[in-house]
Length: 300
DNA sequence: TCAATGACCGTCCCCTGATC
DNA sequence: GATCAGGGGACGGTCATTGA
Image (tube, rainbow, N blue to C red; front, side, top):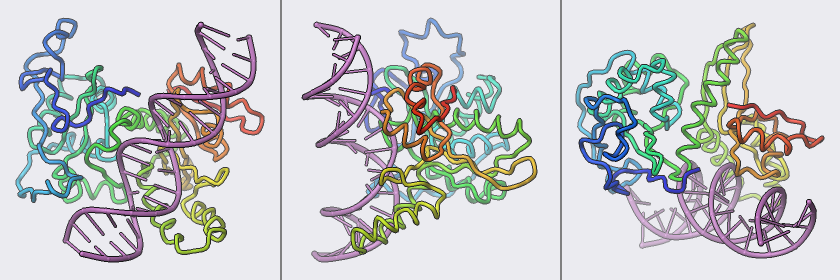
């Protein structure tokens, strides 16, 4: 995970970028890129949606958003953060020109917001509060009744990890569809934590031993497992219908090279399906060969 | 209404000890 | 000496509660 990631353009101004920067690339590294100069990103909005002091009421205005762009917004909102490269690959079949045109349109209308990592200069996208509202109140809602949408960058250090969840989803969704199933809902760890913490907070008034006792009940209510006293939360949960239309779910974890044997083992014991990048998967597999775990690690 | 506080969780980094 | 693994602390996310 890159430690030099500068999450928020306005919080950590990037002096290497200007209004004319194409795809977040500075002048010095444009030579190796065939990308068209005509497609430019818009500057992000200046208010921080999570900072109450900057909570300016955004006036309602009309937006020109195509069905394809609404779908793009739904994807970004579902996963909170998506790398532009992944979005281009998945949503636009690698058609960079179309992806940039649509994303730029959404940025211009302040429905999307971008951030650029350093030094990789990868572009990440998230919904703005306005984009979030648009998605809930317009045609997006009907098509996504149970789906929770998120906006704003969070977890500064983990944006890359969060963005990789989209790749994780694509990989597992392919498997589900290939086996005749259909994904019905995507649940991020945020949603699970929210539900969990609310319930755990209610236990705080109980005696310590009773809290421990109730903890596993609470975990069970959300389909989770307590391993060595800790509730294991997956990075991503997919609810889907199998080929016989039976509702089911799969909990997914995206492991990185930084994972310790203990925490990885706990994820395996909890029954999570664990994915990692090809290189990390090779490195992490020996840890999962523990006879008590015997969990496979799948390569992204 | 809002800020402060505390609890819980996951990830990352640094330090230390064991092993080669 | 180099490498690896584990422990512990820091950090940042969530929530509910409390008091001004």
